[in-house]
Image (cartoon, rainbow, N blue to C red; front, side, top):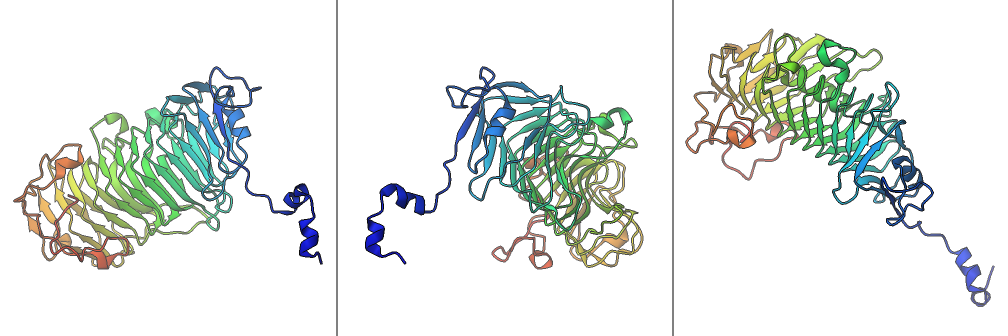
Length: 452
């Protein structure tokens, strides 16, 4: 055993060698179209290619800052070096400069940017012309988690704009944030009726704790935003319009909240299926051999749905299963080419609630199309206008009157503010006790119907 005095006589260099090493300092690496890959990657001597910058960013906390310009890619950009909690590896545009990552020269069926590790951020880029997915987040949750993709513009991708997933429910990709992105004109492989496979503008499969927040997703030849075989997701504050078949889709998805989204069709018939626009929000269970995660315990609250095919759709096709412990509350549905509320016949409905919604039909389509037994769905305090709802959907506290919105049929959230004298004012019931996802309303003595 060393004595204290003996240790004090060691040279400083030896003492430093004994002490545990601290974390390496994070480094900013720069990329510019005027750079050179033989440079050190500093701001004054940047790299030339994005791939070189990504390869240099190997330590947690490192950032690749890309200067303005167009960066054509002939190979997938793989982010495979992980960060750590609080020390993400980041790929981003420099100070709001326009950075375009272009995949026109990629091989057929190649993704443009692939996240293959944890604690990664991608921010402020324009990602275009991918031959497959624009930004892919793929892998087991043990390896791929804590990924943030925010503030990007993704367009003209053959497959999804932004997609996360894996192939095992036992280790799903997890803990992801996809926020404030603009995604458009993706799933181009299906353009013109060439349906090779379904894909999302933005979404995830075999995932857990994925949040899609404040994105705008439009004009994609597949579903707009979606989750399948997923658990504990959040889809909130998005604007989703003019996508193909379904704008927001929960497929074999559980414990997920869909809230405060603006979902609509502008009657752009390029994105019609069977001569109809996409449905607004749809829940179903398709067949995935070897996987089992039937939709249940989902919350659909505070959404505004305008001019869709069906505003809210429960489908029993393929596996079926019905609405299980599902809360559909405080939504505003205005106009549709089909019914505003469509429920397929299914014996699987269980402990579900459709309450405090406003349904106003503006054309000749019916208000509701509920099929089969719906006695396991509680309908209560809904407003119906513009037609006659079926007897089976009527409940205590229902209202049959014009809701008096500011501008029904418009495509802005404020169009659905209630007039001060609206019959929907102060006519709802508290529903927080029906779902753990719904906020506590105990502080308020009055509850309005609808989303506004």
